[in-house]
Length: 575
Image 1 (cartoon, rainbow, N blue to C red):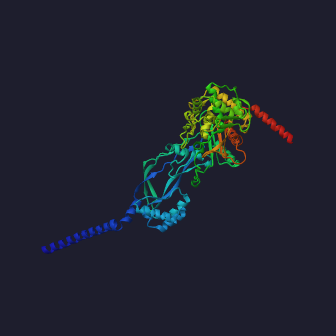
Image 2: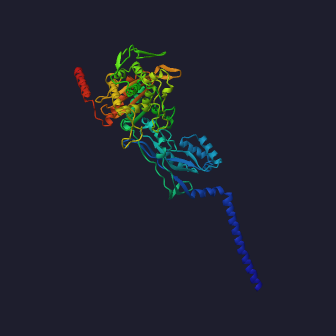
Image 3: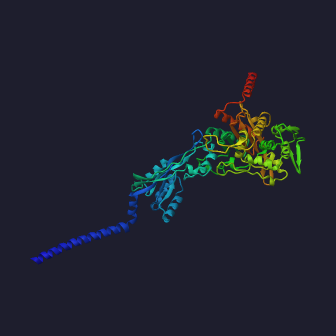
């Protein structure tokens, strides 16, 4: 009996142990199946369901004009990406995705395969995709394809302000212009958060934020968006009308040094990636130099007055309209202007007269005055690519160079340098720092010439617009001061006989100068090429808008009434 009970107990124990053994074998088999045979499948399923840490994109700061109008803004837009190891197993499905995205299917398939072979776990299919296209791609339910939100930069003014604003790359980093100069200020800091995604990689639940994103800071520029538009339009019309190669317009606030507008042509649309070609994106106002011609004469006169050797009413004999220095001959284009005082030299734009004045100055003293006006020195605007121009020290001057510099040859400047120099004259001889940012108060400037001398030169420049070559720069109701300039374009081995640079530089209103502007037109070929007929009308057009937008009161009411009277008489005669 006892033996039978023992045998029965042993049998039951064997069955239990056998069951445990079978269970162990099953568990081991299942583990081998999951972790070895189907490792990739279950690993992928686990990854697609696990908690992930993803970046929280940060919005880039906006660029706005002085009045708060947007010049550059960022908007969220989706981008498509995926795990190349998953996508590489389904090339035909990826070809369907490529067709929807409008990209080369063969190249996309090859790039995904290459990334998979290199062990990468992230590949962009296409960045910044239209939301409707994203929905169509996701509807294909391709394994491994996911979507994320990024930011895209938009420029409401398109090509009107492109050279000043610049643009960002697809990674939202500044590539040109103020976008590049102030990239650290505008860029935000990406954050991180935990999420749960479904088997298709789509987010199904959000969890805690590990690190919040920090948006970039906005930047208020000195640019007036409306004035920028008018400057851009007037310049394009002038380049087209005169069949010119290119041009620039720069407008500066005389009292603060703020850049109110800066336009260049040819221009480009920063919203269109394909339009950023052929060097169009460079800001010619700061990077391209030219010989300023007669627009340099007022600064030679300032140096003459500063030397103490001359007074405004001193007279110079310019007859017979030619002046020989060694083998070089300086002429007044066949004119014999006779005896001229300093105002007459500027008004008549006499090369002979200004050369005779310059030759009586000490080279070091003349250079010092021109240097103090910023010629040959970087403007210090912090704008990427700005250049210092070309201006030799007098120790390197050739015997003709002092005379040629006096009327704008042998010295190269940028439009920004020239407008700042004229703004300094208009500001009573005080130079303000150049700024592309809106100023909340008038900065502390630097005096570069005595106020009396500056005022004397201003009166001479007003005479140029009233009675000289700058008549087409006149703005009805306002007193305008300025100077025309026309120079031959330099080329290898000398100067081109039939290619010119047409310039006008000036400011208004003379009674209390507010804005200074420089207009430069390169290589006009449609008839005339003189600064007074090519560049001066652009100055009048743009500055008239500046006076209106700035709410600047007219200071030439007598001239305005006279003009109205003439118009009334003419209308009466026609009727």
